[in-house]
Image 1 (cartoon, helix red, strand yellow):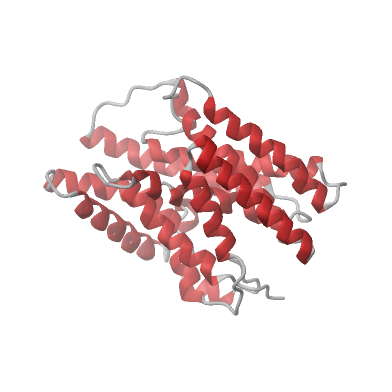
Image 2: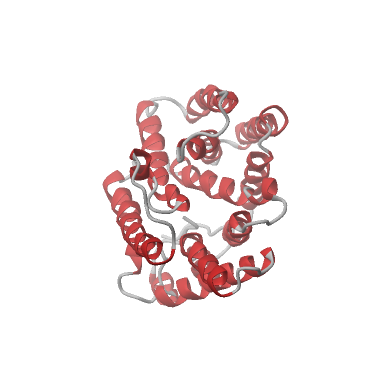
Length: 303
């Protein structure tokens, strides 16, 4: 049985992937805004478990889907670093990242899934309203952790602190989807207030933008759009590949303007991901799946 498809969620995923590429581009402007693309992806990471709270997460399957590609990309970027970059100095925190900083997201995605699974299992006997209410102190506590003095944490712990409030916010938005109309409206208002708190008090405007983007993307539902789902499915490939194309530009045109890096990084990663999505082993790279496989699926989702 087919479920409703949310096209705006996937449109926003594509825009978020563009924002992340720009955020990682050296000398690019508006980094406090473009990091909102990362916030959006982290919110979606926990939204879907919340929306499907009655269905336990298969953590073994999730670990395979995330850690196998992480190991593959660690090998790929390790070879690239050895061939063209500074020598790799092993540190303990490297076990949570890999040879390049952007790979922190895949292990964290698994950690976020574990957090969601543990929370939903621990509160399984409660009503959805009670589950949502208990998330509020989790959000506030994780937001308070952003005030920890010290500034620059060793990666990936700074990225984790940034992301924990988003995990709980996304889970709350997902839980709100199964509430009655009145309760849903109250839950959404609470989420907006928490996002505003992150912006005004904590100073993370990206939390607010990402949260509002998710809330605005959810209401519109319609029949499946396979091509849009296929394009949105390439977003993780764009995330994983764009630093490689930055290196290519830097190798041949080191003085290029920031927008040249962004355009080539995005388009290069998009085209490469699209081509490799047809490779039988594309699941080991997080590159999505071909359109023909999407069209053959019985269940239509944006996850």
